[in-house]
Length: 292
Image 1: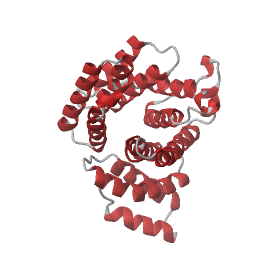
Image 2: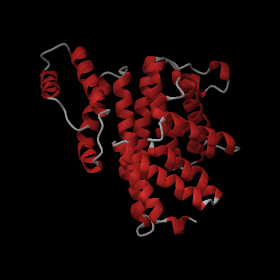
Image 3: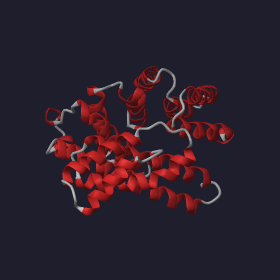
Image 4: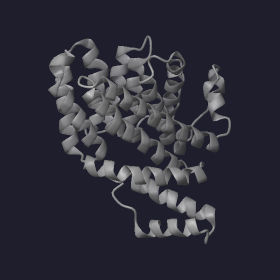
């Protein structure tokens, strides 16, 4: 997200001029953009400013090459992270002062989450025709089996889906999709439980805590696995555990301890994800009296 190389920009110009084999150029640019999307960045302001151009360009290329799983992962992940860090979080921060503005921001965040979800599911469908129908089938024997290159796309498909559902609690049809979203995350988990240095394990913990009849013991196991997989440097795992377990249990001491660990993790590994989680942890700590 920090840069686009001169070669990529020149390739875009050639593509628009129709002077080279279209498919090969799209694939090349798409792969380059996907690798740029995974670049480390700790400045949230810079990440936000770069995101709009990066996401729009990547999205346009993905429409031309829906089977490019690397690009689909970058696009769906980019939209999901943008919605979470820069839109939904802002809604939470302004809600107590301006409920109408918060509602508008949440609606925008939901649209972005669903946009990410559509891109991810389209890529899974392109790589495995019939994927969506098989996933929705109540018969477990008919559920799809993910291969390793699909795991990242499936992760973002499930994460964006779950986030959209969390903002659609007044829509019974959307809420009814929660078990299927959890199913998709579980399929990814079975294929690669350590994906994303604990990101997938953390997502499983969030789903387990949210589903009716979810197990507290299993939720804790998922979050602990996430913390271990991230070598204690995944700030998001600590924040997620604090909000999914300590806060509902009314355990303020555990809540504050987990958030402090999140702050330590964000300093141990500099990245835009950890920077976003650091901001959230600081905000939660500043509002702890209102939360308990």
